[in-house]
Length: 271
Image (cartoon, rainbow, N blue to C red):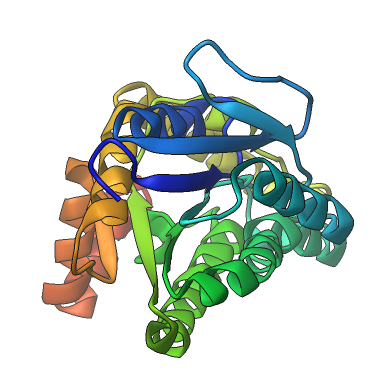
């Protein structure tokens, strides 16, 4: 495939934000791009074909992958971007709410990945990019369950990459920092809030809003995805944005006690 024909890409959660920016950048890079959303959108003016897909529904996922194969005949790149957030103390969420979060952020990835793997294996090539987060590198208070999903994605992706290399398939992670999207506006709140956490939870919400408003443009993450998709010898992880790079450095090279102190200071918690 030449630079103007990079193959076929499938991007989940491509209706807005990072997913939409990623779909556009991949299209500009020469991919034929299919995006998914939970509601019908049709083909956009920028050439991205949108399909309805609920990543928590096995039948929906299988139908989406089948539709891409019927229209394009192959899938060369999968970007697992669909995800939801949850802000609150760990104790404030029921098991059912935690399960719903994992169903999208973790099992949604496994459903779509399993659906495309037979095609990639038969092609003898393919690349899967799983959208993680800086919270997949370092935990954050009042994000325990969300961080847990991203840590799960990190472990799953590393193991899967080892399993699939012999088939010509690589699995890589993209780790964004705070990004200027509507993610914060749509973030889930705890389903059993407790007064004991109310004040600090509100402070964490304000900190997140301020961080998002000053965060990276979604195109920064999209450009990182394109690099991860096109590198001849891909790395295991690609941090996206200055904050993500700083957190990655801090996690890997600073003493644990210093990381703990800096984390609590950043979140305005007593050191």
